Image (spheres, rainbow, N blue to C red):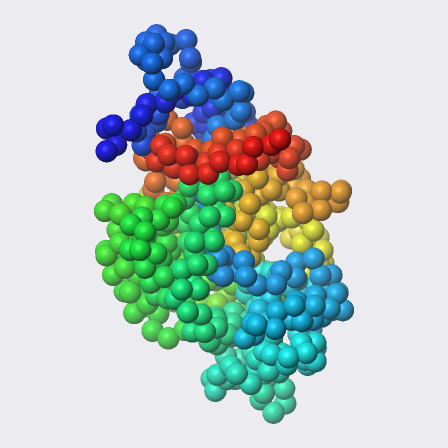
Length: 546
Ligand SMILES: [Zn+2]
């Protein structure tokens, strides 16, 4: 079938020919040829072989000076959660308790059919970091359970009706940080980290039907393709989400985008047994046999977030006396990373605070496997010497520029203090130290859109509130070329996929995006995806402008 697929010659394009992650500027080629599902040529149109081919009467597509880039690969996302989040009330724009309550109340009134009221996008600073069940009571006329997920997806705040339906027998054991309780030992309404994943998510996941989850996944894929993605790395896989993906693949024969997963290993229970489980999944779904649907490694969550005051910094938060410790001890983390590395799995460690980052790098260094492409997720605050160690140790800097948007960092500077603020989101240093930089969005903790993400990375200004003049550590900005590389080839490299996708080169899979773009950082928010192509087929085309 592939052999008979048409040959197409794309001309008059600006084909992004990035071959170097660090180069500040990259030139464009004008011509690209597809044969079947592969790219067979990128270069000059005046080449004799191109002329000869055109004369045989093959299809010639005039790109009219539009930009062609490799298909985006979201290097850190949560596809099923993203799909499910699309049907929750978005509270991202609520800046006070009153506006949040009234948004929920309006939504609840408009949706009497829902069994419970699910919301997302709560910024903890908008409610003064207070999250009591009583603050969400009496706002739904139908008295249903209300669940409000924080924007960073590390906490859920619930009302009294939700406390009544949740299984809370083991809640107290998780401790004050994860499930705050009153003097009688009753949870007061906030569930953070394991409190959220083990209690709230386990409960809510069981409420969805299989059909609802398949539909949610379809929504996620449709939105991703329309946004220009041809691949993703799903960054906290578990049995539940994997089964839903597997079922989707069985129903449809294939996934619309390629997906590599990192299996979540929690700091609770039998940790070694969880790693064994991940190793077994990797054997069963190995990238060498099913590269577009595979388990490539493990994921550890080493700390929380700055907004939740749970990121492990080298200093206490302003109103706290104690340091926040990483969620794994040094010994546990070294045991896990060593065990995974010996089985040839990639290790991905969520580390946001500089103390967590240091521990993560030390653990990876202890495995002595510099070619295994282990990775650290987020890397929001790093010590200068640690930023340099990434490249030296072959560690991928998996970062989400959308998390550096000044509009969501209102409290951040105060929480980390001026010294550490100066060290925030140090992308340029990671790149200068020769680390592979891979961009993701961490959807649904943030918007999934690739172009605003690149705007954050290149301008360091707010993509959601472009009128804001604040810039996040602007000296750490990347250039257009560096940023697009990180969002495509860098993300492919981070999962050992650069031999078959992630750049526009002869022999690689024809995964690409046609962009309407002026190709400057300042105009990225006006750019748009005109077409998405996957394996040589056009899978998305934007509606024609009248
Ligand atoms: Zn994530």
